[in-house]
Length: 416
Image 1: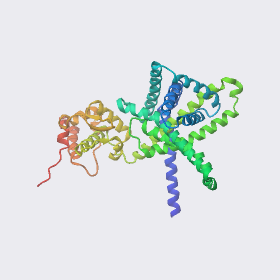
Image 2: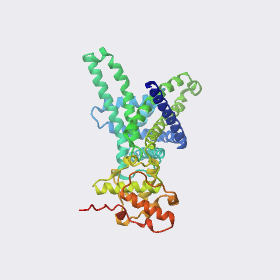
Image 3: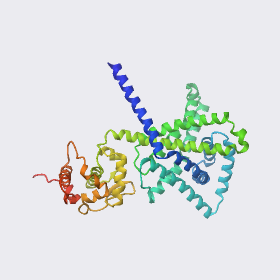
Image 4: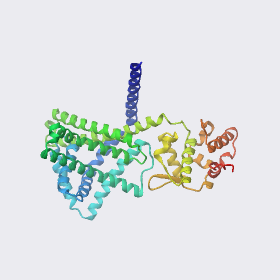
C-alpha cells in the first residue's frame, strides 16, 4: 500500500513538473521573450559601458576597492563572455576607463543610458507578469539604485568569504583535511549567482513576487547559467567561428552569448511567474472581475479600519488570481478609487461615502454583471448584502448598485 501511495505521489509530481514545463514554454512564447531577449541584447551593446562605469564607481567607494574592482572585473568578464573574454575585456576596460574621465554632460548621458537599460528590463519583466503600470518616482529610483549596488556588494561578499576560506586553508589546513576547501570555493560563485538572480526576480517586476518562488527560480537559473556557460565554451571550442571570421569572431560570439544570457534570465522570470500562478491557481475561487474587485476593496477597508494598509502579496489568500488582481488593481488605481503608497501598499483614494459599487462596476467588465458568480461558503455581512443587490439587477435594471461603500461595509451593531 505504501508503494502505491509512493508511486501515486511520484506520478503527481511528474504531472506537475510536466505541466510546469509546458506553462513556462507557452508563456515564454506568448510574451515574446525571444524578441525581448534580442531587444535587450541590442540595448546591452549601448548600455554595457555606462553600466560598468556606474558599477565600478560604486565599487570605488567600498573598502579595499582596488582588490574588489579586480575581482569584479574578473567575475564579470568570465560570465559575460565565457570564451575569447580577454579581447573583450581589454576593449571594455579601455572604454570604461575613458568613460571615467568624462565631464558632467558626458556623465549625465551615461547615467541616462544606464537608466533606460534598467527601464527596458523592468518593462520586459512587467510584461511577463502581466503588469501594465511601471514604477515611478522614488520607488523607481530606489529599485534601480539597489540593482546597481547589490551586484558589487555580492561580489564583495564573495571576495571576503573566498579570502577568509583561503586564509583558514593556509593557516590550519582544516578545510583541506576534510576536502571542503575546493568544494566551498568552487560552489561560491554559483551560490552568489543564485542570490543575485533571486533578488533580480523578486525586485524588478512592479508587483509582489513571493520570495520562495523567486529563490527557486534563482537557483534553477543559476544552475542553467553555469551549465549554459560550460556548453557554450565547449561548442565554440569545436566550432569554426574563428577559422571563418578570424579576429572578428569575437563579435558574433559576444552577441550570441549575451542573447543566450538574456534568454536564460527571461526564462527564469517566466519560471517564477508560473510557479506562483500554479500554486495560487489551486486556491483561486474563480471570481468575476466585479467580485474580485469587491474582495480587494473590502480588504483595503478592513486594513484601514485596523490602522494598516494592504499589501498586494496577500491577494492569493483572498482567492484572487494574480493576473486578475493586476487588472483590477490597475483599473481601480486609474479611477482613483484606490491609491498606492510609496511602500507599495493600498489605501482608499476617496472617502467611503463617495464610492459606490456602481463606480467599481464601471471600472471592471460591466457586461459580466448578468453572469456574476455568487460567493459560496461562509459569507460576511457585506457579501450577503451585495449578493442581494446583484440579484435585483439580474432580474431588472435598477439602482441597486448605487449603495456606497460606507453602507455596504457598515459594521453591524452588537446588541447591548
